[in-house]
Length: 433
Ligand code: RAT
Ligand code: ZN
Image (tube, rainbow, N blue to C red; front, side, top):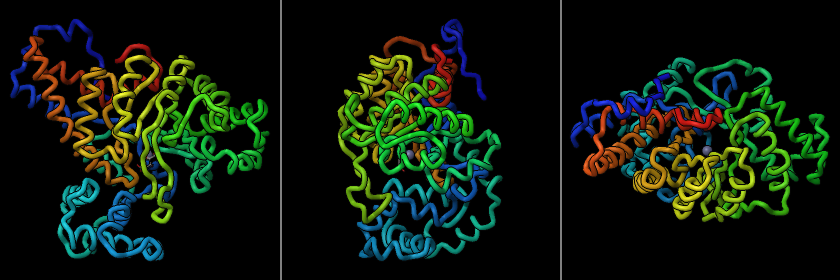
């Protein structure tokens, strides 16, 4: 891992200060070089079996592209879901890449991946791409893709109540240094009435009501999964209507099971707030939307639980400024990423500038949210491309206002943003490294 430590005296040492061109070059160089920790993905380590998605058919059937398909093709969702995976991919390729130029962020991403592997980007069919991916050996392919993307680790999303995933953890006891686990709590926290019986069937003494007995048993369940997965944090996605405190199973479980458990295991809780689930169920995973949330819930959590740490990403553009304000109030809050519908250059630019202006470099600028392995190549390439001018401009303004900017200072910031802030926050260290 690159060194993340620069003592204040080194930052002030008489190193050559950079002019405008030197600043732009140093930013580019540091961004190209940095090995990023991708703090939230839906990728899986290979020992978790076939859960991990990769290859051209998965890239094309990404739900971001499925949403776009139904705007540019007469096919109905019902017809689409009846097709095989390959037929679905062919349908999307034809509608979004052959009959139209792939100019949207998600379509352009597929183009960038094909190009990265030297595959044709304007072919009428997927034959060559399919042959290429079919000839890859997964383990080596993962390492190559991480290297191409400039990431050292991907943080996974691991739901112990996912019927496909949970049994895999019996076998997946290996420590793959490329992946870190996250204990995802959506089923437990958002759908307790549908899931408590599963815990009960596994020997945890829970009931529908969130009684002391139930919260105690849920803590035991979480402790067992922490032992199995070694998660770097726990996480939940939350609707735009999320409130805390409130009289609900979710709020009671949060307060009496999840937060104590995070304290006990000394890990943060990640809150991803602002989803309007399934506004169009016909298009399945692509059917979620966004809503502005009341971030007083976050305020209440940060203030009332100072011994807990909260990573937070909010989905609504309208909530971004408030999130920065709360981060200025609470050191136990770490804003991260430009999530889902926000991961477009125009919005990433706006959010990142706002964060730097309000928080300096004390935030985590981006995560990929990759669901398909090779997506990390284009998502991180786009992040670097969008953010380079923002950082450059930040340092130019600083130099103009009288503070010499050195290459070393820029290195320090890039390491902090793309690695150090996360490592420090999950470890619970007081001072940034
Ligand atoms: O961005 C996405 O892929 C969404 O579908 C969600 O998975 C979201 O990122 C989440 O983690 O809930
Ligand atoms: Zn996600």
